Amino acid sequence: MNILVTGGAGYIGSHTCVELLQNGYEVIVVDNLCNSKEESLRRVEEITGKSVEFYKIDLLEQGRLEEILNKHAVDSVIHFAGLKSMGESVKIPLQYFHNNVTGTLILLESMKKRNIKNIVFSSSAGVYGEVKKVPISEKAPLSVINPYSRTKLMIEDILRDLYNAEPEWNIAILRYFNPVGAHPSGRIGEDPCDIPNNLTPYVAQVAVGRRPFVRIWGNDYPTPDGTGVRDYIHVMDLAEGHIKALEKLTKNPGIVTYNLGTGRGYSVMEVIAAFEHACQHKIPYKIMDRRPGDAAISFADPAKANRELNWYARRTLDDMCSDAWRWQSQNPTGY
Image (cartoon, rainbow, N blue to C red; front, side, top):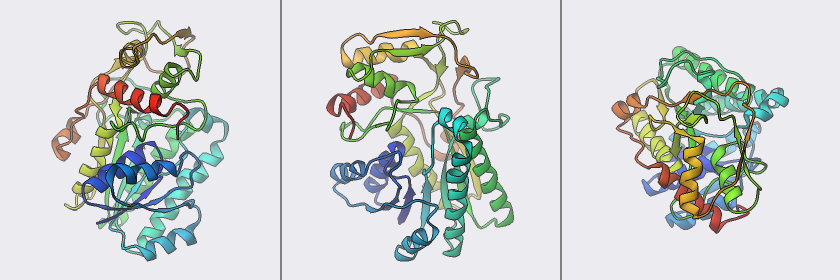
């Protein structure tokens, strides 16, 4: 089967390409490289011993996208491409709506012209907004608190409306919690283009000496150690979830939605302690004021994905931190 992977040179995309290739799929990647590096795909080929067809294009370039779809007999699409910083999205919302939503509309229109009706969409736990109850199931109310998350919810709504109008589509919506870690080879991993927005790449950059200390946003939450608790999931477990979702699409399920998380939370201090164990030295940190909108505790109920996809997050926090450290220590300045 030929799989088109949009945003396939990025963090989650590149790890998913490894899993696709190792499971016998042919992979075509389109990526504009605004959040990623082409080197990641060269390393995917190195890890797997297989080749990736890569095209440097933006999804907004509809003509070029359609040329690629004409050239390759694509069976399914995994759609990762999109701007992804919550904080940045508040400053430049129009750019986020245009890139993420319009880009997706162009992708869907181009797929429809070629009768490609299978898509796995990279959504986010951000569509649940401010968390009222944990664990979070797929039935939890949907609301958003920033433009980035709104683009994810808007795209979900577009996909639901598309399926209602044209039920021959098969659509899997995957809501990620907090992806961390790296491929165990240390050859590919998370390489933020700017200051990391997420905890573990920031901790990794402090551990390798690129940044002076970790900023902890509040230590007075109603949690065991006062710091925020989140559901961290190893990126390779997440990648395997996409393979399971593709397999689900072959059974014509219509439209399905799954949380991809571990089902348990770890505090910021637990993550730092696990990273200290991985790198064998202390990681300096400073306590800052809480950030508005941050929940005390957030973690997934992954029971539906366990049951319907036979997918389980198998890797531990120690695995996540040791693999992230292997990547960062071998690639201190990224790709």
